[in-house]
Image 1 (cartoon, rainbow, N blue to C red):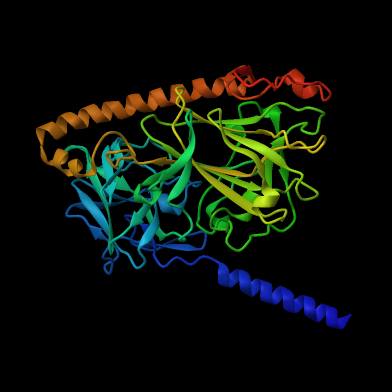
Image 2: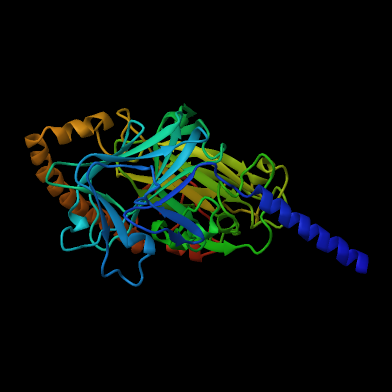
Length: 477
Protein backbone atom coordinates (compact mmCIF):
# COMPACT_ATOMS: atom_id res chain seq x y z
CA UNK A 1 0.00 0.00 0.00
CA UNK A 2 2.82 2.38 0.85
CA UNK A 3 4.46 1.62 -2.50
CA UNK A 4 1.26 2.49 -4.32
CA UNK A 5 1.05 5.81 -2.48
CA UNK A 6 4.67 6.56 -3.37
CA UNK A 7 4.06 5.74 -7.04
CA UNK A 8 0.98 7.98 -7.06
CA UNK A 9 2.88 10.89 -5.48
CA UNK A 10 5.73 10.51 -7.95
CA UNK A 11 3.27 10.44 -10.85
CA UNK A 12 1.53 13.59 -9.59
CA UNK A 13 4.89 15.32 -9.11
CA UNK A 14 6.16 14.57 -12.60
CA UNK A 15 2.79 15.46 -14.12
CA UNK A 16 3.00 18.86 -12.43
CA UNK A 17 6.52 19.33 -13.74
CA UNK A 18 5.36 18.40 -17.25
CA UNK A 19 2.51 20.92 -17.16
CA UNK A 20 4.86 23.59 -15.83
CA UNK A 21 7.45 22.97 -18.52
CA UNK A 22 4.85 22.95 -21.28
CA UNK A 23 3.21 26.25 -20.23
CA UNK A 24 3.59 29.02 -22.78
CA UNK A 25 6.33 31.59 -22.20
CA UNK A 26 6.46 34.18 -25.02
CA UNK A 27 9.85 35.50 -26.07
CA UNK A 28 8.27 38.89 -26.81
CA UNK A 29 6.11 39.96 -23.91
CA UNK A 30 5.75 43.74 -23.78
CA UNK A 31 3.18 45.11 -21.34
CA UNK A 32 2.92 48.89 -21.07
CA UNK A 33 0.85 51.01 -18.70
CA UNK A 34 0.57 54.20 -20.74
CA UNK A 35 0.87 57.53 -18.96
CA UNK A 36 1.87 55.84 -15.72
CA UNK A 37 5.02 56.62 -13.73
CA UNK A 38 5.08 53.32 -11.85
CA UNK A 39 4.52 49.66 -12.83
CA UNK A 40 0.96 48.33 -12.63
CA UNK A 41 0.26 44.70 -11.67
CA UNK A 42 -2.87 43.07 -13.09
CA UNK A 43 -3.58 39.33 -12.63
CA UNK A 44 0.07 38.68 -11.72
CA UNK A 45 1.21 40.47 -14.88
CA UNK A 46 3.40 43.56 -14.54
CA UNK A 47 2.68 46.43 -16.93
CA UNK A 48 5.70 48.75 -17.09
CA UNK A 49 5.34 52.51 -17.06
CA UNK A 50 5.83 53.90 -20.56
CA UNK A 51 7.16 57.14 -19.07
CA UNK A 52 9.99 55.40 -17.23
CA UNK A 53 13.30 57.18 -17.86
CA UNK A 54 14.82 53.94 -19.08
CA UNK A 55 11.95 53.23 -21.49
CA UNK A 56 12.82 53.26 -25.19
CA UNK A 57 9.33 52.39 -26.45
CA UNK A 58 7.81 55.85 -26.80
CA UNK A 59 8.59 58.10 -29.75
CA UNK A 60 6.30 61.06 -29.23
CA UNK A 61 7.46 64.65 -29.83
CA UNK A 62 4.50 65.99 -27.90
CA UNK A 63 2.71 63.67 -25.53
CA UNK A 64 1.02 64.11 -22.18
CA UNK A 65 0.72 61.78 -19.20
CA UNK A 66 -2.73 61.97 -17.69
CA UNK A 67 -4.05 60.49 -14.44
CA UNK A 68 -7.69 60.03 -13.49
CA UNK A 69 -8.18 61.97 -10.27
CA UNK A 70 -11.56 60.35 -9.55
CA UNK A 71 -11.34 56.76 -10.80
CA UNK A 72 -14.27 54.43 -10.42
CA UNK A 73 -13.66 51.92 -7.60
CA UNK A 74 -14.72 49.15 -9.98
CA UNK A 75 -12.25 50.03 -12.73
CA UNK A 76 -8.89 48.35 -13.21
CA UNK A 77 -5.75 50.23 -12.18
CA UNK A 78 -4.71 49.90 -15.81
CA UNK A 79 -7.37 52.45 -16.75
CA UNK A 80 -6.42 55.11 -14.19
CA UNK A 81 -3.78 56.65 -16.48
CA UNK A 82 -3.49 57.41 -20.18
CA UNK A 83 -1.01 58.73 -22.72
CA UNK A 84 -2.27 61.61 -24.89
CA UNK A 85 -0.85 62.47 -28.32
CA UNK A 86 -1.53 65.85 -29.93
CA UNK A 87 0.38 64.99 -33.11
CA UNK A 88 1.44 61.76 -34.91
CA UNK A 89 3.35 59.56 -32.45
CA UNK A 90 4.32 55.93 -32.08
CA UNK A 91 5.62 53.14 -29.87
CA UNK A 92 8.60 51.03 -30.99
CA UNK A 93 8.97 47.40 -29.91
CA UNK A 94 12.12 45.40 -30.56
CA UNK A 95 11.11 41.94 -31.81
CA UNK A 96 13.13 38.94 -30.65
CA UNK A 97 11.17 36.24 -32.45
CA UNK A 98 9.72 36.88 -35.89
CA UNK A 99 6.28 35.51 -36.68
CA UNK A 100 2.71 35.93 -35.48
CA UNK A 101 2.18 38.43 -32.66
CA UNK A 102 -0.79 39.46 -30.55
CA UNK A 103 -1.43 43.17 -30.14
CA UNK A 104 -3.94 44.42 -27.59
CA UNK A 105 -4.82 48.08 -27.23
CA UNK A 106 -6.73 49.21 -24.13
CA UNK A 107 -8.96 52.29 -24.19
CA UNK A 108 -10.97 53.68 -21.28
CA UNK A 109 -11.69 57.43 -21.43
CA UNK A 110 -11.90 59.68 -18.40
CA UNK A 111 -11.99 63.44 -17.91
CA UNK A 112 -9.58 65.98 -16.45
CA UNK A 113 -9.53 69.79 -16.32
CA UNK A 114 -7.74 69.91 -19.67
CA UNK A 115 -8.93 66.83 -21.57
CA UNK A 116 -12.04 64.76 -22.02
CA UNK A 117 -10.73 61.54 -23.51
CA UNK A 118 -14.12 60.57 -24.91
CA UNK A 119 -13.81 63.51 -27.34
CA UNK A 120 -10.60 62.14 -28.90
CA UNK A 121 -10.85 61.05 -32.55
CA UNK A 122 -7.84 59.33 -34.07
CA UNK A 123 -6.31 56.64 -36.27
CA UNK A 124 -4.10 53.69 -35.30
CA UNK A 125 -1.85 51.71 -37.64
CA UNK A 126 0.87 49.06 -37.45
CA UNK A 127 3.14 47.43 -40.04
CA UNK A 128 1.31 49.07 -42.93
CA UNK A 129 -2.11 47.94 -41.71
CA UNK A 130 -4.80 50.43 -40.75
CA UNK A 131 -6.22 49.13 -37.46
CA UNK A 132 -8.52 51.97 -36.44
CA UNK A 133 -9.84 54.91 -38.44
CA UNK A 134 -11.65 57.91 -36.95
CA UNK A 135 -11.84 55.96 -33.69
CA UNK A 136 -13.45 57.28 -30.53
CA UNK A 137 -14.61 55.72 -27.27
CA UNK A 138 -17.74 56.77 -25.33
CA UNK A 139 -17.32 57.93 -21.75
CA UNK A 140 -17.27 55.26 -19.02
CA UNK A 141 -16.58 52.52 -21.54
CA UNK A 142 -13.71 49.99 -21.52
CA UNK A 143 -12.63 48.81 -24.98
CA UNK A 144 -9.91 46.28 -25.74
CA UNK A 145 -8.94 45.91 -29.39
CA UNK A 146 -7.37 42.51 -30.05
CA UNK A 147 -5.23 41.99 -33.18
CA UNK A 148 -3.16 39.23 -34.75
CA UNK A 149 -0.33 40.36 -37.05
CA UNK A 150 2.69 38.63 -38.51
CA UNK A 151 5.97 40.48 -37.85
CA UNK A 152 8.75 39.74 -40.36
CA UNK A 153 11.22 42.41 -39.25
CA UNK A 154 13.13 43.31 -36.10
CA UNK A 155 10.79 46.11 -35.07
CA UNK A 156 7.07 46.61 -34.56
CA UNK A 157 5.83 50.19 -34.70
CA UNK A 158 2.33 51.14 -33.52
CA UNK A 159 1.32 54.64 -34.64
CA UNK A 160 -1.34 56.96 -33.19
CA UNK A 161 -2.49 59.92 -35.30
CA UNK A 162 -5.15 62.52 -34.41
CA UNK A 163 -7.62 63.04 -37.26
CA UNK A 164 -6.68 66.72 -37.32
CA UNK A 165 -4.65 69.34 -35.48
CA UNK A 166 -7.59 70.19 -33.23
CA UNK A 167 -8.02 66.62 -32.05
CA UNK A 168 -5.83 64.19 -30.14
CA UNK A 169 -5.26 60.48 -29.59
CA UNK A 170 -4.91 58.43 -26.41
CA UNK A 171 -4.24 54.91 -25.14
CA UNK A 172 -4.32 53.40 -21.64
CA UNK A 173 -2.30 50.23 -22.12
CA UNK A 174 -0.58 48.17 -24.81
CA UNK A 175 0.27 44.47 -25.01
CA UNK A 176 2.61 43.00 -27.63
CA UNK A 177 3.06 39.23 -27.27
CA UNK A 178 4.66 36.68 -29.56
CA UNK A 179 2.12 33.97 -30.32
CA UNK A 180 2.68 30.19 -30.43
CA UNK A 181 3.72 29.09 -33.92
CA UNK A 182 0.61 26.96 -34.37
CA UNK A 183 -1.89 29.59 -33.22
CA UNK A 184 -2.89 30.58 -36.76
CA UNK A 185 -2.45 28.40 -39.87
CA UNK A 186 -1.94 29.92 -43.31
CA UNK A 187 -4.78 27.88 -44.86
CA UNK A 188 -8.45 27.54 -43.93
CA UNK A 189 -11.61 26.32 -45.68
CA UNK A 190 -13.67 28.98 -47.45
CA UNK A 191 -17.39 28.22 -47.20
CA UNK A 192 -19.87 29.88 -49.56
CA UNK A 193 -22.58 29.34 -52.15
CA UNK A 194 -20.07 27.71 -54.53
CA UNK A 195 -19.12 25.10 -51.95
CA UNK A 196 -15.88 24.64 -50.02
CA UNK A 197 -12.38 25.50 -51.22
CA UNK A 198 -8.97 26.32 -49.77
CA UNK A 199 -8.37 29.88 -48.59
CA UNK A 200 -4.65 30.61 -48.46
CA UNK A 201 -2.53 33.52 -47.21
CA UNK A 202 -4.04 34.12 -43.77
CA UNK A 203 -0.63 34.75 -42.23
CA UNK A 204 -0.02 37.66 -44.58
CA UNK A 205 -3.15 39.47 -43.39
CA UNK A 206 -3.92 41.36 -40.22
CA UNK A 207 -6.86 40.10 -38.17
CA UNK A 208 -9.01 41.51 -35.41
CA UNK A 209 -10.85 39.26 -32.98
CA UNK A 210 -14.42 40.53 -32.86
CA UNK A 211 -15.99 37.61 -30.92
CA UNK A 212 -14.48 35.06 -28.57
CA UNK A 213 -17.22 32.84 -27.12
CA UNK A 214 -17.22 30.20 -24.39
CA UNK A 215 -20.20 28.18 -25.60
CA UNK A 216 -22.32 26.79 -22.78
CA UNK A 217 -19.95 28.11 -20.13
CA UNK A 218 -19.19 31.13 -18.01
CA UNK A 219 -16.96 34.09 -18.75
CA UNK A 220 -13.27 33.18 -18.87
CA UNK A 221 -10.97 35.97 -17.68
CA UNK A 222 -7.34 36.57 -18.77
CA UNK A 223 -6.16 35.09 -15.46
CA UNK A 224 -7.51 31.69 -16.57
CA UNK A 225 -6.14 31.76 -20.12
CA UNK A 226 -2.51 31.07 -21.01
CA UNK A 227 -2.66 33.80 -23.69
CA UNK A 228 -4.53 36.20 -21.36
CA UNK A 229 -7.70 36.28 -23.46
CA UNK A 230 -11.29 36.95 -22.43
CA UNK A 231 -14.07 34.55 -23.48
CA UNK A 232 -17.69 35.60 -23.00
CA UNK A 233 -20.82 33.40 -22.64
CA UNK A 234 -22.96 32.57 -25.68
CA UNK A 235 -26.52 33.13 -24.41
CA UNK A 236 -27.02 36.53 -26.04
CA UNK A 237 -26.13 35.16 -29.47
CA UNK A 238 -28.42 32.11 -29.50
CA UNK A 239 -31.12 32.37 -32.13
CA UNK A 240 -33.49 30.06 -30.25
CA UNK A 241 -32.47 29.30 -26.68
CA UNK A 242 -34.82 26.33 -26.39
CA UNK A 243 -32.94 24.51 -29.16
CA UNK A 244 -29.80 23.93 -27.10
CA UNK A 245 -28.80 23.19 -23.54
CA UNK A 246 -25.55 23.86 -21.70
CA UNK A 247 -23.50 21.00 -20.28
CA UNK A 248 -20.30 20.85 -18.23
CA UNK A 249 -17.57 18.27 -17.63
CA UNK A 250 -15.58 17.73 -14.43
CA UNK A 251 -13.03 15.28 -15.81
CA UNK A 252 -9.62 15.92 -17.36
CA UNK A 253 -9.35 17.45 -20.81
CA UNK A 254 -6.95 15.27 -22.84
CA UNK A 255 -4.70 17.43 -25.01
CA UNK A 256 -3.19 15.27 -27.75
CA UNK A 257 0.34 15.76 -29.13
CA UNK A 258 0.00 17.55 -32.46
CA UNK A 259 -3.56 18.62 -31.70
CA UNK A 260 -5.17 21.53 -29.90
CA UNK A 261 -3.24 23.00 -26.98
CA UNK A 262 -4.19 25.19 -24.05
CA UNK A 263 -2.93 28.13 -26.10
CA UNK A 264 -5.56 27.35 -28.73
CA UNK A 265 -8.21 27.42 -26.00
CA UNK A 266 -8.08 26.78 -22.23
CA UNK A 267 -9.68 23.96 -20.25
CA UNK A 268 -12.55 26.22 -19.22
CA UNK A 269 -13.65 26.40 -22.85
CA UNK A 270 -13.38 22.69 -23.60
CA UNK A 271 -15.00 21.48 -20.36
CA UNK A 272 -18.29 23.22 -21.17
CA UNK A 273 -20.46 23.07 -24.28
CA UNK A 274 -23.91 23.44 -25.73
CA UNK A 275 -25.69 20.42 -27.22
CA UNK A 276 -29.09 19.78 -28.80
CA UNK A 277 -31.95 20.07 -26.36
CA UNK A 278 -34.11 16.93 -26.33
CA UNK A 279 -31.68 15.49 -28.88
CA UNK A 280 -32.29 11.83 -28.17
CA UNK A 281 -35.77 11.68 -29.62
CA UNK A 282 -36.75 9.31 -32.37
CA UNK A 283 -36.17 11.67 -35.31
CA UNK A 284 -34.89 15.07 -34.16
CA UNK A 285 -34.63 17.48 -37.06
CA UNK A 286 -33.53 20.85 -35.77
CA UNK A 287 -30.29 22.72 -35.29
CA UNK A 288 -28.75 25.03 -32.71
CA UNK A 289 -27.90 28.41 -34.21
CA UNK A 290 -25.89 31.44 -33.08
CA UNK A 291 -26.08 34.83 -34.85
CA UNK A 292 -23.25 37.39 -34.80
CA UNK A 293 -23.60 40.92 -36.28
CA UNK A 294 -20.45 41.93 -38.21
CA UNK A 295 -19.26 44.62 -40.65
CA UNK A 296 -19.62 44.38 -44.42
CA UNK A 297 -16.59 44.67 -46.66
CA UNK A 298 -14.52 42.00 -44.93
CA UNK A 299 -14.12 38.28 -44.78
CA UNK A 300 -14.01 36.53 -41.44
CA UNK A 301 -12.07 33.63 -40.00
CA UNK A 302 -14.42 31.46 -37.95
CA UNK A 303 -12.68 29.06 -35.57
CA UNK A 304 -14.89 26.40 -34.01
CA UNK A 305 -13.79 24.48 -30.92
CA UNK A 306 -15.05 20.95 -30.26
CA UNK A 307 -14.51 18.45 -27.45
CA UNK A 308 -16.70 15.38 -26.97
CA UNK A 309 -17.64 15.66 -23.31
CA UNK A 310 -21.16 14.30 -23.85
CA UNK A 311 -20.64 10.75 -25.21
CA UNK A 312 -20.25 7.75 -22.92
CA UNK A 313 -18.52 5.70 -25.63
CA UNK A 314 -16.53 6.28 -28.81
CA UNK A 315 -18.04 6.69 -32.29
CA UNK A 316 -21.50 7.64 -31.05
CA UNK A 317 -21.46 11.33 -31.96
CA UNK A 318 -21.87 12.46 -35.58
CA UNK A 319 -23.18 15.88 -36.57
CA UNK A 320 -23.16 18.55 -39.27
CA UNK A 321 -21.77 22.09 -39.14
CA UNK A 322 -23.27 24.99 -41.12
CA UNK A 323 -22.02 28.52 -41.74
CA UNK A 324 -24.54 31.03 -43.08
CA UNK A 325 -26.73 28.07 -44.04
CA UNK A 326 -24.04 26.36 -46.12
CA UNK A 327 -22.73 22.94 -45.15
CA UNK A 328 -19.20 23.43 -43.77
CA UNK A 329 -18.56 19.98 -42.29
CA UNK A 330 -20.71 16.90 -42.95
CA UNK A 331 -20.85 13.98 -40.51
CA UNK A 332 -18.20 15.37 -38.18
CA UNK A 333 -16.81 12.48 -36.12
CA UNK A 334 -14.78 13.71 -33.15
CA UNK A 335 -13.73 10.17 -32.19
CA UNK A 336 -11.94 9.74 -35.52
CA UNK A 337 -10.46 13.24 -35.54
CA UNK A 338 -8.95 12.81 -32.06
CA UNK A 339 -7.56 9.30 -32.65
CA UNK A 340 -10.34 7.51 -30.78
CA UNK A 341 -10.27 9.59 -27.62
CA UNK A 342 -13.11 11.20 -25.69
CA UNK A 343 -12.71 14.60 -24.00
CA UNK A 344 -9.93 15.47 -26.44
CA UNK A 345 -10.07 18.95 -28.07
CA UNK A 346 -10.29 19.60 -31.79
CA UNK A 347 -10.72 22.86 -33.70
CA UNK A 348 -11.51 23.77 -37.29
CA UNK A 349 -10.93 27.02 -39.22
CA UNK A 350 -13.31 28.39 -41.87
CA UNK A 351 -13.47 31.66 -43.82
CA UNK A 352 -16.83 33.21 -44.73
CA UNK A 353 -18.41 36.35 -46.10
CA UNK A 354 -21.20 37.95 -44.04
CA UNK A 355 -24.81 37.38 -45.04
CA UNK A 356 -26.85 40.12 -46.69
CA UNK A 357 -28.29 40.84 -43.24
CA UNK A 358 -24.80 41.73 -41.99
CA UNK A 359 -24.63 38.64 -39.79
CA UNK A 360 -22.64 35.44 -39.54
CA UNK A 361 -24.77 32.42 -38.63
CA UNK A 362 -23.17 29.38 -37.04
CA UNK A 363 -25.25 26.20 -36.72
CA UNK A 364 -24.81 22.61 -35.59
CA UNK A 365 -27.32 19.87 -36.33
CA UNK A 366 -27.87 16.10 -36.51
CA UNK A 367 -26.21 13.74 -38.97
CA UNK A 368 -27.94 10.88 -40.80
CA UNK A 369 -25.17 8.54 -39.59
CA UNK A 370 -26.38 8.57 -36.00
CA UNK A 371 -28.21 5.64 -34.55
CA UNK A 372 -31.52 6.26 -32.73
CA UNK A 373 -31.12 7.68 -29.22
CA UNK A 374 -27.51 8.77 -29.90
CA UNK A 375 -28.39 11.75 -32.09
CA UNK A 376 -26.75 14.95 -30.92
CA UNK A 377 -24.44 17.84 -31.86
CA UNK A 378 -21.93 19.83 -29.81
CA UNK A 379 -20.01 23.09 -29.80
CA UNK A 380 -17.59 24.18 -27.05
CA UNK A 381 -16.13 27.46 -28.24
CA UNK A 382 -16.14 29.94 -31.08
CA UNK A 383 -13.89 32.74 -32.33
CA UNK A 384 -14.66 35.16 -35.15
CA UNK A 385 -11.81 37.27 -36.56
CA UNK A 386 -12.10 40.05 -39.13
CA UNK A 387 -9.56 39.74 -41.97
CA UNK A 388 -8.00 42.91 -43.40
CA UNK A 389 -9.37 44.01 -46.77
CA UNK A 390 -7.54 44.60 -50.06
CA UNK A 391 -6.30 48.00 -48.82
CA UNK A 392 -4.71 46.47 -45.75
CA UNK A 393 -7.37 47.95 -43.49
CA UNK A 394 -9.48 46.58 -40.66
CA UNK A 395 -11.51 49.76 -40.40
CA UNK A 396 -12.74 51.14 -43.72
CA UNK A 397 -11.31 51.78 -47.18
CA UNK A 398 -8.27 53.67 -45.98
CA UNK A 399 -4.58 52.90 -46.42
CA UNK A 400 -2.30 53.30 -43.41
CA UNK A 401 0.29 55.35 -45.33
CA UNK A 402 -2.31 58.06 -46.00
CA UNK A 403 -3.05 58.66 -42.32
CA UNK A 404 -0.14 60.98 -41.55
CA UNK A 405 -0.55 62.80 -44.88
CA UNK A 406 -4.14 63.63 -43.93
CA UNK A 407 -3.01 65.13 -40.63
CA UNK A 408 -0.30 67.21 -42.34
CA UNK A 409 -2.77 68.79 -44.79
CA UNK A 410 -4.01 71.20 -42.14
CA UNK A 411 -7.29 72.64 -43.44
CA UNK A 412 -8.31 69.34 -44.97
CA UNK A 413 -7.55 67.75 -41.62
CA UNK A 414 -9.82 70.24 -39.84
CA UNK A 415 -12.63 69.32 -42.22
CA UNK A 416 -12.03 65.61 -41.66
CA UNK A 417 -11.92 66.21 -37.92
CA UNK A 418 -15.43 67.64 -37.88
CA UNK A 419 -16.76 65.07 -40.36
CA UNK A 420 -15.22 62.04 -38.61
CA UNK A 421 -16.20 63.34 -35.20
CA UNK A 422 -19.82 63.60 -36.29
CA UNK A 423 -19.58 60.34 -38.21
CA UNK A 424 -18.27 58.53 -35.13
CA UNK A 425 -21.27 59.71 -33.12
CA UNK A 426 -23.81 58.86 -35.82
CA UNK A 427 -22.16 55.48 -36.42
CA UNK A 428 -22.30 54.65 -32.73
CA UNK A 429 -26.00 55.50 -32.59
CA UNK A 430 -26.77 53.53 -35.76
CA UNK A 431 -24.77 50.53 -34.52
CA UNK A 432 -26.62 50.57 -31.21
CA UNK A 433 -29.99 50.77 -33.01
CA UNK A 434 -29.12 47.95 -35.43
CA UNK A 435 -27.80 45.74 -32.64
CA UNK A 436 -30.97 46.19 -30.60
CA UNK A 437 -33.09 45.59 -33.71
CA UNK A 438 -31.22 42.38 -34.54
CA UNK A 439 -31.18 41.05 -31.01
CA UNK A 440 -34.84 41.87 -30.27
CA UNK A 441 -36.23 39.03 -32.38
CA UNK A 442 -33.75 36.62 -30.84
CA UNK A 443 -34.67 37.71 -27.34
CA UNK A 444 -38.32 37.05 -28.13
CA UNK A 445 -37.54 33.71 -29.84
CA UNK A 446 -39.39 34.95 -32.91
CA UNK A 447 -39.60 33.31 -36.30
CA UNK A 448 -36.75 33.81 -38.80
CA UNK A 449 -35.69 32.13 -42.04
CA UNK A 450 -32.83 29.71 -42.57
CA UNK A 451 -31.70 27.55 -45.55
CA UNK A 452 -31.04 24.64 -43.18
CA UNK A 453 -32.80 21.31 -42.69
CA UNK A 454 -34.59 22.47 -39.57
CA UNK A 455 -37.91 22.39 -37.78
CA UNK A 456 -37.28 23.66 -34.29
CA UNK A 457 -40.43 25.43 -33.18
CA UNK A 458 -41.19 25.52 -29.47
CA UNK A 459 -43.97 22.94 -29.94
CA UNK A 460 -41.63 20.59 -31.76
CA UNK A 461 -39.01 20.82 -29.03
CA UNK A 462 -41.57 20.08 -26.36
CA UNK A 463 -43.00 17.08 -28.21
CA UNK A 464 -40.26 14.45 -27.88
CA UNK A 465 -42.02 11.88 -30.01
CA UNK A 466 -43.02 14.05 -32.92
CA UNK A 467 -41.42 13.42 -36.30
CA UNK A 468 -40.01 16.27 -38.40
CA UNK A 469 -40.26 16.66 -42.12
CA UNK A 470 -36.52 17.19 -42.67
CA UNK A 471 -36.92 19.38 -45.72
CA UNK A 472 -33.83 21.04 -47.18
CA UNK A 473 -34.73 24.60 -48.02
CA UNK A 474 -36.17 27.62 -46.30
CA UNK A 475 -37.78 26.42 -43.10
CA UNK A 476 -39.01 28.23 -40.05
CA UNK A 477 -37.03 27.93 -36.82
